[in-house]
Image (cartoon, rainbow, N blue to C red; front, side, top):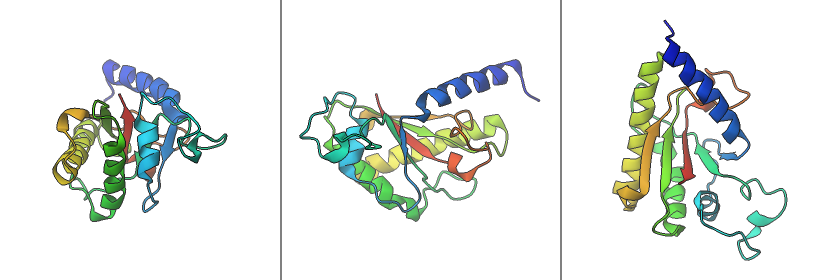
Length: 175
């Protein structure tokens, strides 16, 4: 049964999702992640100049991006990160290390709409926390720089059906 508060959350999520849709670089499974691109996307304090690689050229997807999305795979009904996701997470960590030490990063967990909203909220939070823990324990990133949050299925990728596998992702943006 859908409650009034659930409907309000869904309406807010739809509006928020639309606001972020154009500014997210989405990586596919196995796609190489460039740490320099990560640093540019997540750095909220950078002033873009010509000295910052080719990302500043017109038409570059990362030049105007505010967030990046990785299809981090997990074991079914679990927050255990699959080994296939580690290469992208390792490149992400290298990019975070290029940021100023005061730059904070939000780690967002997302799910598809299969399952109850409460189940998906809890699962997405656990998965965001697992990614944060991986970045801290394996790469030595200061835990105070990372904030993990779960959105369940309330922020699906615009243009996809809510049950699409691409909605099961971890998204990152600078704070």
